[in-house]
Every structure is written in structure tokens, then in C-alpha cells.
Length: 349
Image 1 (cartoon, rainbow, N blue to C red):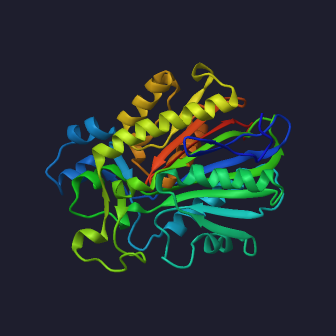
Image 2 (spheres, rainbow, N blue to C red; image 1 turned 120 degrees about the vertical axis):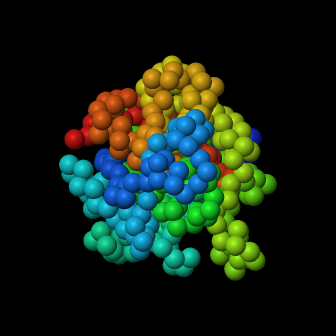
């Protein structure tokens, strides 16, 4: 048994889990926000040689939301953050703001401090986490560690991305998959044996897979684009499909084993909403029945770091989550980076 904050290395990964009754992060609020503008498959048909059947059969997506011109990641993050804070019945002042994003407002500085200031939280620690589609899981791990370690008493964790700003307007495949959005979770210090507590966390990465998901230009390696394609997000779809299933399944198994849960004890699997076929396959590989695999991808698409908190907010709003439910969260994203978290659902308004 590992004491709270201790780590276990398994196959190059990082695993943590708290001992029962120890200090831990507890979920206190959840909310999501998506832009008003809807981009349907019908809209895409007017731009590309495609069809509704082609998109749905490959992705499970019928529509997605896209930000209007000038609407930035921070704008969505503030909306989701404010809603999450408003959903909390009573909590101590927020000590920390973490923003998981791959589309910050600017390359420098980080976007989190501006989000914190706009939420009236100026002066608290605030920083960005960049792990693409795994960003929220990584941010949750950071928040758990800082709360469990006594560094902070509470945190606002936001996942937000405006991927429409980095998609090649001539690329049918990426425009069909990605949408914009934000999701936020409020976490407070509590005990690992109470409802809402974060339990096991498994994280991993493989830098040899960097080219699977990338925007080549804009960083210190390549400040400017050598060609038009370098400006835009690019993804090797088939390879990402294989690795996502493998890594999310392996990581989920490790998190479940560390928590002491069997797959049939998981009330809801909330995986990164990358692709409907990936969601179904991960659930099947783990032995989680389809009725316990949550999906909202059909209406929002792949919202990157916002994906898991948006799914949690939607599931909560739809009454699909009950206090005490056992949840498994898992994600795979660029880097490559992946991770999984087990937690119980709290009693929320």
C-alpha cells in the first residue's frame, strides 16, 4: 500500500493512490460551456466532398460547436469556470487555477493568470498545462497532488480549447472531428474515503510518437512555417486510433487495479471523446458494458482538453450520475501522453 503522494513506476508510467482516510482532492462542482455557433455535418457537406453518413460512420459526430471570430480560449474558460464556481454550495476561497489547453490565447504568457483575474481570483497561483487531449487528466493529477500535499486547499481546474483556430480549412478529416468548448471542475481538500474523492491516478507518455499529433510551426524548434501545412494541426488518424485504444485500455486497467475495482464495478466510464469507435472499443476491451460508457461526442465533437469535463457536466445535468457512483476517466493525446483517474461522484446540487 502506497502512502498518499507516493509513486509507483510501472512500464515507464507514474501511478499514485491515496490510503483510505488520508487527505485528498474532492470534487465540489462541475460545469461546461460551448460556443453558440453550431457546425453541422450538413454545413461541412457544403465545403467538402463528404456526406453525413461518411462522417457519422467514422466518428459518431453529427455536429460540433465552433467559436466565433475573436472568441478565444480564455473566453470559453471564463464562462465554464464561472459556472463551476456558481455550482458549488459552499467552499473556501480558491487557491489555485489550472488551465489545460493546447490553444492558449498567446504563445507567451500563459492564459491561466488572465482567466483567474477575469474570474475575480487575481493573486492566486495560476498556470497552464499542455498535454493536448490528456490535459484535463494531467491537470487533475496536479491538483490532486497539490491539495493532498497541503500546498493549497482548493483548486479550479479548467480544460478549454478553440481548435477551430488551428485546423486547416481545407482538411476534411480534422474539420469533421474537432469542436470548441470548455469544462471546469472545482476541487477542495477532503478525505480519500468521502464521496467525490479522487483515488488512483496513472500517467504515461511516449515522446517517440510526437509526430502522430502536431502543429509543426510556432515553437522554438520551428518558429515560422516553411509551408502552408506547417501552420495547421495534423494527425495520423489510423496510428492515433491504434495507440489511443492500447494506451487508454492499459492505463485504465492500472488505475482500476490500484483502486481495487473490477471493471464490472465501474458505474460510468468517461473517456476522452475522440471518436465513437474508440470509446466503444476501449469499453469492450476493459469489460465495461456499453450502457456504462458515456458519450456526448455526437453533439460536441472532440473538444480536446475540454472533452472529459464537458462529458462529466453533461452526464451530471442529464441525471446520469448519482452520489457514490464509481467513475473511471481516461484519455490519450498528443505528446504522446495518456492517463487515467478513478474517483467517486459527490453529492452535487
